[in-house]
Image (cartoon, rainbow, N blue to C red):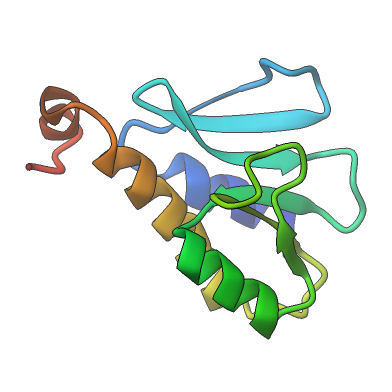
Length: 119
């Protein structure tokens, strides 16, 4: 998967902000001030860290060798996805969506409402 597709999908989320708080090698996506994705720009193939339900994280790691415990993250709640083409693109997009949704659910109600996410 190409960087432009990753960036387009992640930046298209309501309230998504991007920046480089850890240096130029890691593009960070946040919503409501909380991280929902990190893209390792200096890795080939590209890698993205995504938040994940702990049970689902284990399932995905079992299904795809390119999904590993989150690098430099809480390995129970984060996966690193190596974008080498072995994980179907629609599955990667679904993982991105789930990561965003998990973070949005943790935001205060007023912030969720501001994003148009309701209760």
